[in-house]
Image 1 (cartoon, protein in one colour):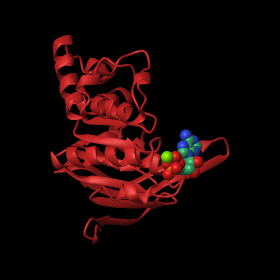
Image 2: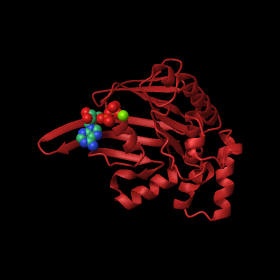
Image 3: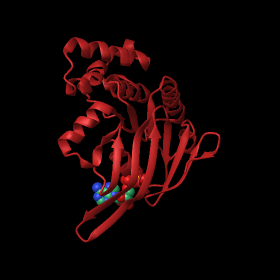
Length: 232
Ligand SMILES: Nc1ncnc2c1ncn2[C@@H]1O[C@H](COP(=O)(O)OP(=O)(O)O)[C@@H](O)[C@H]1O
Ligand SMILES: [Mg+2]
C-alpha cells in the first residue's frame, strides 16, 4: 500500500521580491513498512519536503496523497485532522513540554484525538514501555538525559498509533552513541511494521534506513534501496 504518493510536488517561498524554489517537481512514493532516510546538504529542501509530507504546510504545485487522502485539496482544519490521525512527529530538539512529566507529554496527542483519561493513560504507558522508559514515566524532561527525552518524544509520536513517523534530524542534538541507540529503536519499530521517514545529514544515521533519497537544490538526485536497488 502506498502511504505517500507525491506527483510533481513543488514549493515556492515568496517574501517580497525574493522567491525561493525550495522543491521542484518531486516524485515520491513511499509504501507501508518502509524506513526512508532523506539526505542532502543544508538548504536542499529536506525540511520543506518533510513539512509537506507531515501536512504542516501546503505544496504550491503538484498532487499529494497521504494514506489515500488527497491532501493538496484540503483546507487547514481538514489538513490538521489528517495530520492528527496519520502522523507522529519527532523533532531534533525533542519539543517536550518542560512542566509536564514524561507520561503527560506522551498523552498530549491523545488529548487532541479526544481519548478519555483512562484510555490516554493506558496508551501512553504502552508507548513508554515500547521505548523502554516505563519506570521513568513520572520524571520531568529536565530529569532525563537527551537520549531519554528523545525516547519520550518517540513514545509521544507512537501513542496515537500513527500510520507513519516523521523525524527531522532526530539524532542532531545527541552524541553519536545515543544517536545510534535512537536508530536501533527506529529499526525495531520498523521491524514491527512502522513506516518511518527521517531527515538527516549524517551518512551513518541515514544508513539505518532501508532506502535513501538524496536531495540537491530541491530535486531528488538519487533514490536507492538497501541492496543498491535504484527506485525510478
Ligand atoms: N519559510 C521560508 N521562507 C522562505 N524561504 C524558506 C523558508 N523555509 C525554507 N526556505 C528556503 O528554502 C530552501 C530549502 O530550505 P529547507 O527545506 O529548510 O532546507 P534543509 O532542511 O534541507 O536545510 C532554502 O533555500 C531555505 O532558505
Ligand atoms: Mg532542515
